[in-house]
Image (cartoon, rainbow, N blue to C red):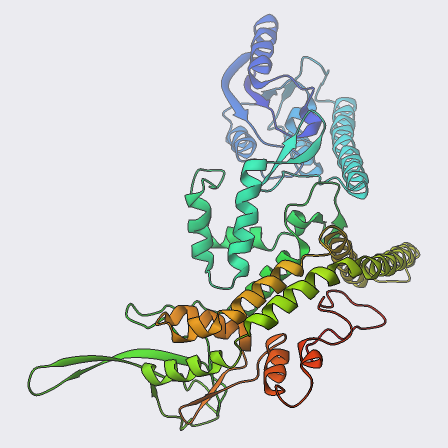
Length: 522
């Protein structure tokens, strides 16, 4: 009987096909086999897809054409080329039972359409499926072991490179600088995700397809803990061996901005920028915004004005606050700034004391490092107890993941804080000098016409405490300006030696200690 055969060659990119001949080699071998055995091959089917699950389109088309009577035999390299799952294997055996498939030919496997032949074919399909299943489980076990060693078992994100020689992930120094700058840029709270996409594109960071980073992808980059030395695998957070490029403090700030930032506010082309974002309404607590107004006189003169007023977005309160001219607001803010100016002789004394005080910080730093190390040891013990409880099935998987994430985040924060304080224990000195410089220069800033500079200075002094009510600006300053104001108000009332500084020095408390120091100006 002269059977018609379809030649079927398949190769996938999966690990189990690593040792299988390429498609070209399969076709060459199969055609030589067909010629040697006098097989009539009417068509060739080539597929590049895994056979682990049903649904291969070319394989399905071949079987459909066999059912239509276009052929009654299949020529393949081995039974595992036809099926590695029970559905496809069962379908072939069913077509043999129905007589649709009269012959199967393999250079590496003998088959006859007899009960014994079908039994052996079923065993071959079963072996193929068992091989795939066991290989998949072994691969997953290997990946889990890799994760436990702190090795990320996937493609490195932007800013890193997969080192195939050492099977590790290393920092891409050029792109890492851009990623770090991107986090710092977004942490300011003044950028949209579209701006982040532009920021990356301008610095040559594009998608794998050469396109601009979409804002969805930008969100993924900004929320990926991989850049802090951690990574997620199977919805669980793990400690990584790779080098972090983003400080945990910056990462947390970015997450806060991502969480709090709603729909981007699109400013109009002519919206004033000078004092916007500086004040809140004293009645309803909403932001103070500004707008241009144009007044045309009958004689043809045109006057431009800038007014500031409450946005009145609080729907529960009908805010009665009136608007205020920019000139009046400028005058009041200038007056407030002058109250915080620092005398030249005080500035000299404070600088001298700051230099002295930095030498006394070493003991406090050592105490903090010791306390942090104790806390880290306690966290490691909690992590071990948590793992033991999970392995003993006393803790649910979701609770285990949630608690582990919290502990790892706390540990990461302590590690970074301890390293930062050990390496930069005198970082407060430069900001202190800068504050003294600003405070002694406030009179000049207040008298100048640069409104943006006044806004920056007012933001430094009051933070978000400035309120506008009844066209009057009021607000409580933040430390150290609050202490400076009390000191200025005490002139002539108490001895000057007590005004300048208290008994504990100038160094601010930059970390949590059991005994807190008083570091304010009296």
